[in-house]
Image 1 (cartoon, rainbow, N blue to C red):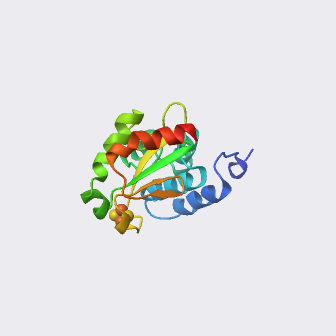
Image 2 (image 1 turned 120 degrees about the vertical axis):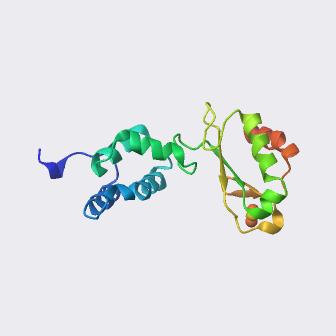
Image 3 (image 1 turned 135 degrees about the horizontal axis):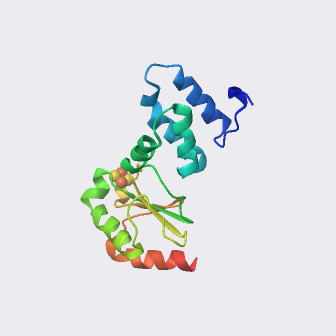
Length: 163
Ligand code: FES
């Protein structure tokens, strides 16, 4: 087997992008861009994918996992069946979005970017969703919930569990 026909588990477009990065100065500076592409395609960053990024981009595996864990927008576990995203834009924040985040965290027992063990819920935050008049806003999968309060969180979770 030659160097060009090595089997990769990453999609060929990502491999191609990494190879283009290698031709530039400081290829390692493209690590975040590469990880965004991986997450964009697979929805999260698995260990095997990160290991392959490290190998192809010629950076230590520890660097890749360090970057992936440092930035909260990278997911290290697959999203749950219900992907909960609390808007932390200014309008939502001043109307109590942080209390909503806290309520989800304590009800679900997970932190930001994490997924419950049963794979049902994942929790993340987002920037302004462009519907500030409805603040504070929570997006669950594709559905927007407006004027959410922390008190409503247990009921929202119950509805999802039953749905
Ligand atoms: S700040 Fe939350 S929708 Fe704009």
